[in-house]
Length: 185
Image 1 (spheres, rainbow, N blue to C red):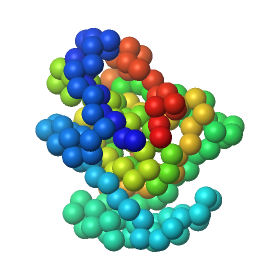
Image 2 (image 1 turned 60 degrees about the vertical axis):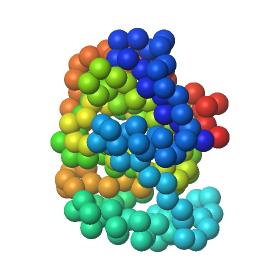
Image 3 (image 1 turned 90 degrees about the horizontal axis):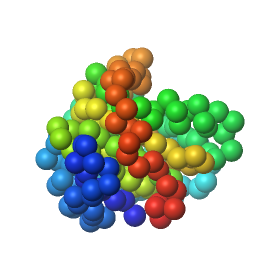
Image 4 (image 1 turned 120 degrees about the horizontal axis):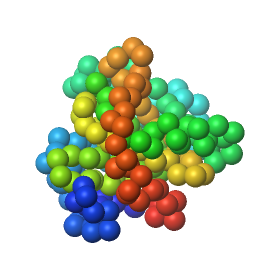
């Protein structure tokens, strides 16, 4: 089940808010400009479904988001626990960074932990199957896919070069909890 926890940015031991209520997660995140939605596939998806099949299953929501935001590229990324480059892939996203475009991800399957640093707070969002998160450009954040990652996600881009992270050089991400797959449903 999706979950939001909010911490003061200087105390990872103090959880100010914890909720798994979808409406409350969306409301709390909207307060900092972050989009959070739940989508349902219009057709069943089998494990290992081709990217084209995955995109077709969510076509109406994808088209709506593209029309609203002007995304130029939509693709599907998939990673499994046996991926030989999983450690390097995980490490790439673990430090605080931002992008010069919105980072929008929809979780078709699996889970991952987005952590946002906004003002004096840290927002930890456990995203799972059916969750869409839209992190506004220049929002400082990090992402943890866990030590044995498993997820399939639809990604949306406005820039032709896709994911470009600008790292802040701070150690804040190392002070907050990492993704624990036992927290995922």
